[in-house]
Amino acid sequence: MAESSQRLAALDALRGIAALGVVLFHYLPYYDQLYGHTFSPPSVLDVGRYGVHLFFILSGFVIFMTLERTRTAGWFGLARAFRLMPALWAGIAITFLLVHALGPEDRAVSFGSALLNVTLLHEYLEYPHVDGAYWSLVIEATFYCWIALLFYGLKAWERIRIALWIWVAISYAGVIWWKAIPDALDFLVKDLLFVKYAPLFVSGMLIYRWHQHGRPAAPDLLLLGLSIGHAVVAYKAPFNIFVLGCYGVFALAVAGYLNALANRPMLWLGSLSYALYLVHQNIGYGVIAWGYNAGLPGWAGVCLALSLALTLAAAIHYTIEKPALAWFREMRGRPLKHLHSLL
Image 1 (tube, rainbow, N blue to C red):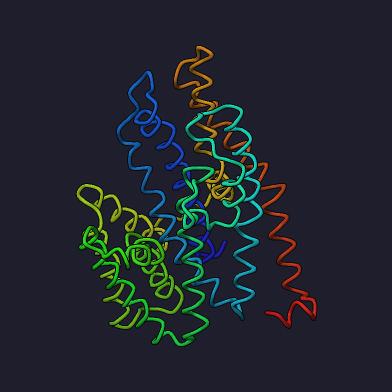
Image 2: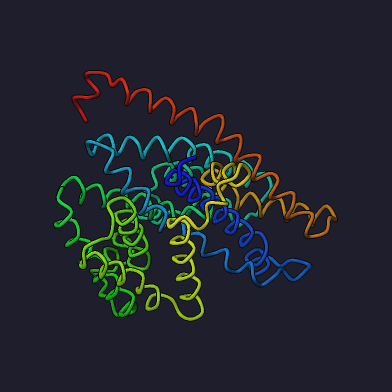
């Protein structure tokens, strides 16, 4: 495997590790906080919550790579839709059914809410998530819309960079004056511009450009430094240290120092990461609670939940996610005339 390809493969493996970290955080310390375990989970697993922040950095990196390889906004939108939606819809259906069957009751949502989840607009309409982890998918989808608008609308990197400077500046202002944001701007700043997380995506894009195009110009370097520094302002200590640690791990992977992660088990876990993220949290809570009710020790319920989550993730990945992507890539390679005219 070429060194550059191995670096990108290491990022795939890193995605799998981040997903596993989120799962263990939800099943152990967070479950203990919500419902109570009969044992004390290792406190170190609290850092698993920052797997989401690593996902956002990775997303910025990968999305800009995708944009540079995609000729129109229409094809970009279709590529993202085929990447996210088929697995998401399967995850929503499975989670909705199993949570209603297993519990917890406080995690079950109505059928109407589940239907709105398939659009990823549900949070903006104040409907609950089918799975608690879906909050980050709403941010991801919103980011795709913004970055497609900037990339295909502004075209030149110099103009895109100005827009990103403005976004990062608003993000600093938003987190500094979070409680003082006027009601008229609250939705725009906190939700549509997601100022707590936007610099994570921006930094991922800038790191991609550094990786792909060589040492960046001074304005890009300064913007990257400000994007990373945003973590110090946005999160209180020691949480900001953990977010900065995500940057450190990501930088090591891009620089080629974590190529050992690109092994078969880690790459397999990376391939399941999205599907695993979709189905793990609320279903896992139901399985853990079922284990306690059946008289099993807490660790056994956690193992059962993890096993089921991996099994469901593998089923979604191999029967839905991969076939949908393969079909789209074949269609993109041989586009129909009427479809091509729309894109």
